[in-house]
Length: 187
Image (cartoon, rainbow, N blue to C red; front, side, top):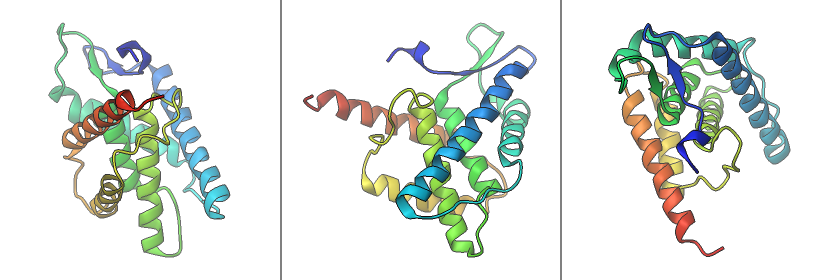
């Protein structure tokens, strides 16, 4: 894969993204949520119900936080456009999902678990090149998967989303481990 295979978020010198990019991301979030609901239905015989307009809410929060809280921490090489890579995109999106809790359930623990899984699923798809590659193999280890889900379940009560950059580094390392293992596996 080359760097151009992935969709980075590009912000102009004033911290603005193109409206078509913002609309496209909302459609992608809706698609990932739909795919997750299909997975739950087919593999777990579980019907998922989302809050109304939750993809729009998460997308809006993403761009607002990216522009207002994080853009100034990401330096551009040329002094103009700021490029936000897929690891930061996955991290912020994942954290917003567990904060917003888009899946509604009667049981609080079930809701926390399902929303953590949705967040992980969405981040995995972002790292996996927006569904261009099958991401079912993006499993570093069972313990990483389990512990990351536990972390996501518990971070829902966080007062801010400060771990965006450390979580992005986690996704970067998970991707590197996956790619290393893939390269060393005989085909």
